Image (cartoon, rainbow, N blue to C red; front, side, top):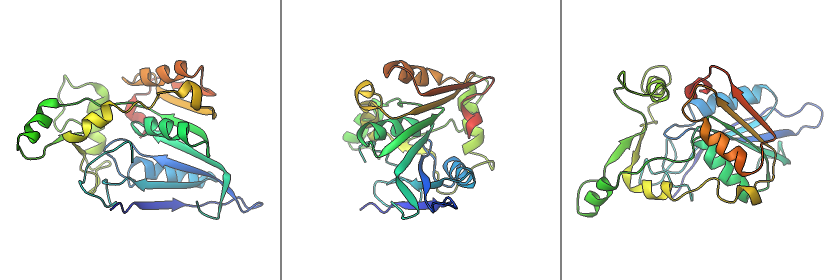
Length: 236
C-alpha cells in the first residue's frame, strides 16, 4: 500500500485568490526535506503554490520494499489551468516523462537533469540464486582524488551535516536497476512534449549532455540556461 507524504506551500495571488501551482520532483536518493523542500519554500515565497513529496517507497512515504524507485509509479487555492513541474537532477527526467503524458502540466523546468542510472547484473543474479537483497549507494561514501567533482560534491552534500537527512538513506536496491535502464524519459518527446520547457544546467558539470540531448530531440527548449562556472551540485 502506498502512503505518500506531502508538503504544500501556499501563496495565493492577493487579487485573484489563485496561484500558479508547481510540483517539485527531488533528486534521486533524496527526500522532500532536502533540496526539493528548499526549492518549494523559495518558490512559494515568490508567489507560487508548491507541492513537494516523498515518492512511494522513499523517505516518510509508505510502501515496501523501501528504497525502491519505480519510474512506472489539486488544492482549491491553485488555478488548475496553471500547474507546472520542476525536476531536479534525476527528478528532471521524471518531470519530462510526466509532462509527455499529462498536458495538465502546462510547463516544465529541469535543473541539472540526469536521465538514467547504471545496472549491476551480478548482484541481481546472486539474489535470484538466494543471496540477501542488496543495495547500492547513490553517492560515493568515501570519495578520493579520483572521484569526479560532481560525485565528490554530492557526497559532501548528502552524507555530511550540510544536508544529511535521517530518512534519506542514499541507497537503492539493485533489483530495480533493470526498470530504470529500460525507462527512457525522452522517448517520443518530439511528438508529445508540447509545453514550454526551461532547461538549466551548469557549464562545468558532468551532466549537461542530458540537457543538450533533450534540447535537440524536441527541436529546442523555450529557454535554455547554461550557467557559467557552475557544477552539477551548485543548484542544490
